[in-house]
Image (tube, rainbow, N blue to C red; front, top):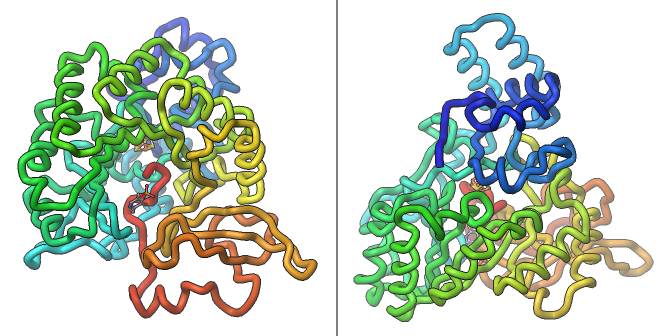
Amino acid sequence: MKYKAYSLSNYLTLPQIEKISAEKKSSIEVVGSVLPFKVSNYVTDELIDWDDYENDPIFHLTFPQKEMLLPHHFNKMAEALVQSSDKQFHKNISNEIRLELNPHPAGQREQNIPKVEGLELLGTQHKYRETVLFFPSSGQTCHSYCTFCFRWPQFVGMDELKFAMKETELLIKYLEIHHEATDILFTGGDPMIMSFKVFEKYIEPFLYDYKKTNIQTIRIGTKSLAFWPYKFLTDDDADDFLRLFEKIISKGINLAIMAHFSHPRELATAAVQKAIKRIRNTGAQIRTQSPILRHINDKAEIWSEMWRNQVNFNCIPYYMFVPRDTGAQHYFAVTLLEAWEIWRKAYQNVSGVCRTVRGPSMSCSPGKVQFLGVGEVNHEKVFVLRFLQGRNPDWVARPFFAKYYENAIWMSDLKPAFGEKFFFEDEEETLFGEKYIDRETSNYE
Ligand SMILES: *Cc1c(COP(=O)(O)O)cnc(C)c1O
Ligand code: SF4
């Protein structure tokens, strides 16, 4: 696979480029100067339908669109590109815009970093009792970039926004003390961007020292099945990865590939189907998840087809997420009500074996909150919610109510239906002090 510098001719064949209108090309250039852009030739050759690219979900998923920037940001960047040909000038302008989009304001990211022996584990996050997130520093990029992704500060070379940890040693020490953690979740970027040689270094300590920890499941969050299934087929080290998966499982550790699929198209190629088979043959599970996104998968039929196909291919549907604030939330967001309508219709149209999926779920400060839908109490319409995960595990599976609000797109738009506060608010403050700022802002976990 080849990655080249930014320019359409580096990513697309001439016949593909000729299909794109001049206007589209220039808006791709403008937006692509601010938001990260990278696409694999598997995506451009096997997933995108260039004859209908304007409506193509995978085109929207990977190619910058004009409306992803707010008009004043778009114009500012467009003018800069016209004004001067100085690359540094372009960079300065795009950094100014990025800082305004930055979902992780400085300072706040420093909270909630686990510590061991007084040292901070910079590349880890331990928010929910059972599961520790780990961001290996070599896994901070991806095979292609999703245009909705909140993790872009990690990709665009603004170093102070990047957090990662080289040392698994410290992490293992932490896990030796914290036996409540049964799961370690490798995330990124995409850990499957790593070569086998590097990846093995991260996994090996778990194979030899795991008995001192209480780790029972290793999860790997990845979009590689959708963006580069050859990782498990024809890459030089494809077989090494599969043998390592077998080795993990032979140690009695459960291995779950948390695969990110946003559209049934991503499951339709011979390559992905074969890659899924090879992974499943190692004994690893594949669990699937995606945010719900306007322009990409905002229809019930898309989700029911996706879940059905996943189950047919031996994968387990796991999460439907509501996307949180990303640089382009105005472009991708659906309201909670729309998300629930789509969820409900899709869920009603699949059999029980697909209903392992949970959602629509918001990863927010107190926990993962599922929007259960609209109920009626004393002739008043209310939103019914519950925690799927909570900073306090005792909050999980307790239904609670918010005022009906048609335009709500996120937890922060909601107000308690009865009383002054949600049941967890006082406790969140006394137990945890300041509100939690998600560093990983899970569209992905
Ligand atoms: C989602 C998430 C997890 C994993 O939660 P599960 O419900 O077990 O999949 C772990 N840590 C964080 C911070 C998360 O957002
Ligand atoms: S959603 Fe995943 S694969 Fe897509 S850009 Fe973000 S981290 Fe990379």
